[in-house]
Length: 432
Image 1 (cartoon, one colour):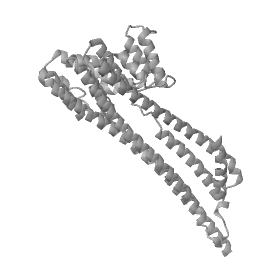
Image 2 (cartoon, rainbow, N blue to C red):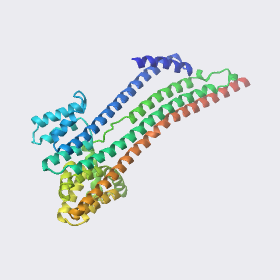
Image 3 (cartoon, rainbow, N blue to C red):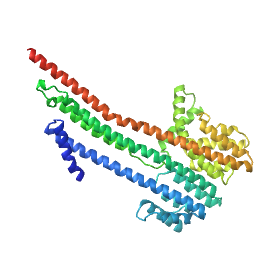
Image 4 (cartoon, one colour):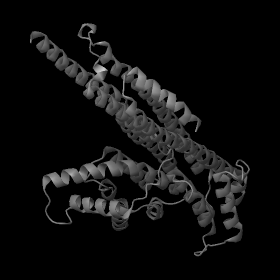
């Protein structure tokens, strides 16, 4: 209500400065109230996203460190619970997970730890959370050594935090630029009143065209500000990557087009299918490779691939099933690895699969070095892909700050044409 009270004098000031009619006060004030309400809603949502991101990163870091030190999932969760208040979302999620872990309430299949972690995942849409939970569940079941995999995940988590920090800082800078651009656009819209010659004895603000165009531009400015705030607002977490049914069907159809399983397809169909699937696989591959790398710390390469199958779906699952079948038929051959999404010809995928084959083919002594190289390669790949994704998002957002200036320039052009028409009319009257 305080903001609405402040808005009324602001709207009255705008109406007075730009010479608008009194009849426009109500629609301008109503539109301003609606816009401010929307903007505040996006701001509150953005603060909630930031809090959720902070809670998730703190929880995952503590979970990994505690599990690495204690080697027990329940004790690691107990350590995490001490970091959060019980009334916050993460505190409630951890308390619920602890309750399931100790009582087994609601668990049907007998996998209590997995059900406990799933209760936390329901509150937060984070792919890294899912990977870390699956790693701990697998370590608890197999009793595998957790030190090196935990270090890998902690390193990946730190790199993700740095990328997110840079991305969010650039988003804040774009918000400031958009605010400045809107303010300058408002000043530019006032220029047309200053260009009216006093000798004509005519104020352009008395023109009906000026009145309508000015009000329309202000309403458009409010709409642009709302759209900018909406576009710059969004979850800070890395989405789980789960596809809905329609997306999965569409990608499977594109996959069959490229594999030639549905008859002949035109060059354009294959080109579009390749382009769309390349974007999808390039984003999914680093997360899958990270999961395989974690399993490789305690399993053979073939078993690691089989275990990773449980965490994949859609097109990636189809290709992975084909890869596992071909490796089973030709366990020492490089061809199955090179044929993994070979129809897309993605260099990063081909390079990662070659390293994966080296881990499979080399002896025990060499596998450790190959795994370290695979981890480093995957970190670089994930950093490259996520940085590229963030750059694409920022490129689109940077265009938003140009919209207010474009609108104000068009407004100025309309006013100049209107002024020219009025001036020519005055000269004609003087001639008569």
